Length: 111
Image (cartoon, rainbow, N blue to C red):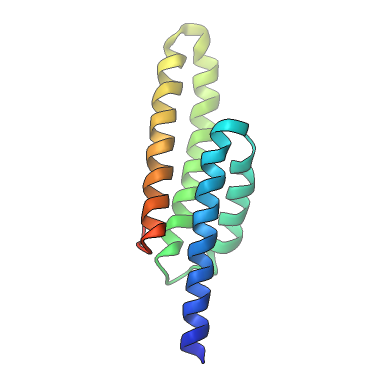
């Protein structure tokens, strides 16, 4: 019974990781769903200890804060033109980390 419960728990964590990655991708369109996603990642990170999904929640948290800080810096630097390059690079990095994580979560692998 506990083995079945453990498998179900891992499947729930996998599903939440996938949903959170989708929320991050939707944030490219609406800007706010990443905030919901990072809250889920913080809440579920402890539950994911010892599973491949902890690395996903750690990645999601890291991507959120890095994007927020670099996005603010890039927005400030737009006034000196280099900000456009910073923001373009940030978008590529954000999409790479999010899509890579989503694909690995779908496959049940650690980030």
